[in-house]
Image (cartoon, helix red, strand yellow):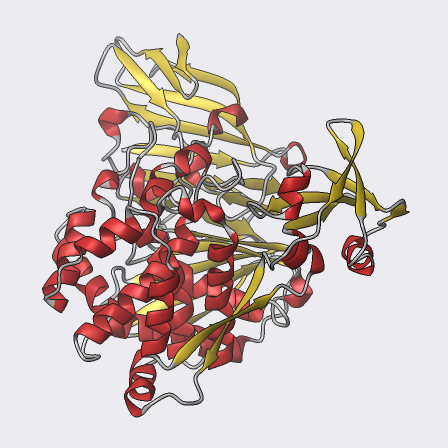
Length: 569
């Protein structure tokens, strides 16, 4: 039995005092802190938040503890049956994958801050919380008397919790499974509509898979007073941070439904249907996989599609979401240089930062599009009898239920079994290759009686000059340049801070000044690496960045209309 105690005696300092009891079997024991957390495929360096680490034996005597890597310590455990590990963890960041402490809450993702010992990783775990008596605890962990229990360390790492006096919750039942919706923070929920809507997308997801992997599930929502949007999946729960509070049931409500549906779908896809390289997770190092297009891309596609299927999105709502993915795809020239499978492998390298211009693609965006195309290919080749839902259901029952990891070969062969058609070209060209997606997108939309329309971006600098900017701290910063555009040919760099056009200071109105001087010479002044510089932007002879939209074909035939209606059921 492994035991953890969490103490919050000094919340103003934001240090959680943690003590852990581990049994010991050898003369020398290694304490390991996780190097990463599932759902975020990059190294996390949680050890930088550890302070005052001390280890004691069964007699209360301090033992030698020597750090041997950035997140592993060697402990002398000769002549003792167990050790007590005491330390402080700095918890001052609040997002869906972090830990946070203040005078109103103790929010913990155990994968951030709980040590483990390899030899006792599969032992049961008890968790005790030293918190005020009027605080509630939101978690998927099982309550047993005065402690919570997990079957092993992996379940603990997968069981975030929020302890607070501001928690509120309601429950609903779907297919005999109990679901909890928790809110922490300032929020005035419209419970009736919320429960109806959550039950709608939950019902149809379970209906398509025919069963749910767990017997109880918790939506842990951290509502923040500022702009936030983040979700992290767990087997029996999800943590979602969203804000500002006043918009959650207003302009952010569709986004809230979207991220909730997305995270729920992950219960099957990645928490159950898991890449073979991640079964089991290795918390000591990178877990490389080329299947990001499956575990994140398909989830992105299906999460929104289920909102359409359940009636929570109308057709235009869904088109708006899918065309955002098309827009991101066509705007990123990394699609010609690096495949989605290669980009998946490299999430550990630069998957969550902009990185080198046009080097890579997004597993979420490309994977979503490939999920859509695969869904339509399946429907086309089976006369609408089967779609992607059938593939995912078979992955779940053939592999996940049997404790097997999934490979690209398994995924590909299932599609071939259902369609009777080789998928070699599709996987070679689009998943492992860099062939343009435009033709397969157009073909898939056409099958549903839809069209992909494009027109020049309405932002002058994007369509005519080939560059994009962002505004940060009152600065106008170039953040994207179209290859071969006037912006690139002039010598403009990503990161340049634009000051003026033809001696007129921009003051946040760069595009208006550029379009004003449409047919004139345009001299741009900017700051680069602390130096003032300028360039002359040449005139372009064509359009560069385009705006993409999905529209229904008014002349769609009967077969296309039937296919569309089947697809959204």
